[in-house]
Image 1 (tube, one colour):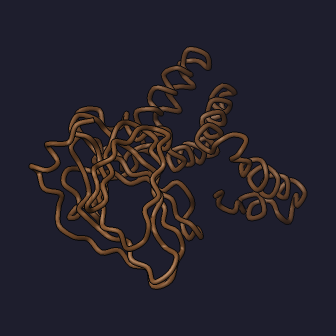
Image 2 (image 1 turned 60 degrees about the vertical axis):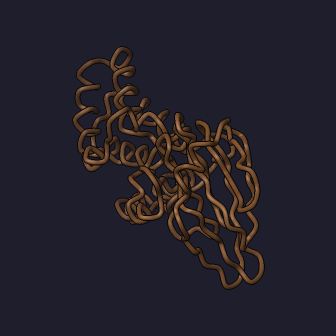
Amino acid sequence: MTTKQTAGHDALGEFAPEFAHLNDDILFGEVWSREDKLPLKLRSIVTISALIGKGITDSSLAYHLASARKNGVTRQEMAEILTHIAFYAGWPNAWAAFNMAKNVYAEDEDNTVVNGAESHGGFFGLGKPNDDFAQYFSGRSWLNPVDGEGSYLPIFNVTFEPGCRNNWHVHHASSGGGQVLICVDGEGWYQEEGKPARCLHPGDVVEIPANVKHWHGATADSWFSHLAFEYPGEDTSNEWLEPVDDEQYNTLTA
């Protein structure tokens, strides 16, 4: 979901209204919104590559570096992208871009963890530590919103380190409701109360009915990421319950 762009109208609306229209309504309003043709993450990578290749390292590049970060390009990926670009766009251009990128990704430095966590998260990126829900997880997890704030159907990319899983929990609803998981990276588990655990791989989809007690997370030796969203319903709420027993978890085999 692309944020409404107003930069052209704000800066040039009176002086050049047609240019402002083309910039805000066509380029950012129509071209960038064609996510079914090319995802926002790839559009960001193409855009910053083109700008750096032309030697444009002004505020427009800073804007698109920030957009790239928002669209799921991780700090590690950005460093590799700029290193690659340097061989084609020139070392001075890359240096200028690196200095901007360091500022854009500065707040991520405190969130970088050992063992290469930033390389995980799949196509949608690692995101930030899932601190608000850490008390309901055994191990470390990260959360990355996929769509814009205020979306009708919020979608999040959740990443679990090896051995991490959330507590047993229930998505309550008097009608409708429930949750969907779409696995995008690594190997994980999903289990409903009273049923055997199901091993999950990229491409697997799990539909979780409302009012069903369950848990999900990574296998003991693999990182795991899934998209998660909840169906709209009436009287919806989430109830967090007890952690998954270590002994039970350790008996699971893929």
